[in-house]
Length: 243
Image 1: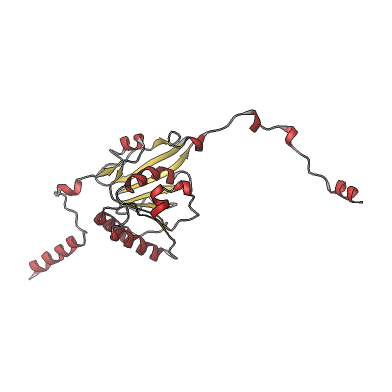
Image 2: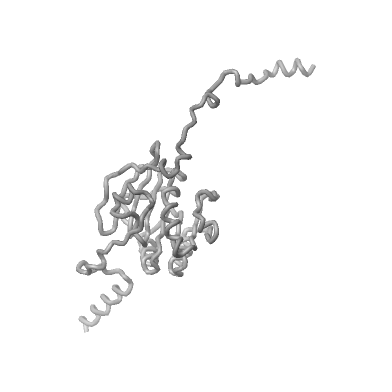
């Protein structure tokens, strides 16, 4: 009786994908998709995971995290054009969106964290999206597990952008990165990779793909010229002129 109960309990855990079988070679298989940046792909053995949850933590919003994602989002949209953006903290400029997102993109703004998790999970389980980009700072291990399972079952890539996360909290996700600004791009710290070792921080040059963002004009026209400064009239001068 006790043996049957243990077998049934173990099977229930397996059905919920809560048991990791170390001898299962398929669990160690790593499928990747190119990031569009050769340096990034070389360091991460091919690029982003093909599906699952990728956690991104930029030091400030808008330092280049969407520029980092644009190439892979464009490639993923070739087969499944529908893409979703959830909990966007500000108005998305068209230049940040791929052509697929501009034509067949969903921008959803749930009222709270609980509904945000639910919306993202439903988008993943639908299997209609090639990718989902979500902004959500607070996330429990149980919620992360549900999103990870949903992303893998539907073979969808979820980019979860968080303004900050605790390094001591380990979530069941496929990859975890921290992003910091550099003069010509980003400093990338790979904190976690599923079935692989973390990496030392490295510099990623974005100026080659986005030169207009890093070009600095040095012509004399833009130089400071004292003759262009017009003194603001004093209060006494205005009173004298009025009288």
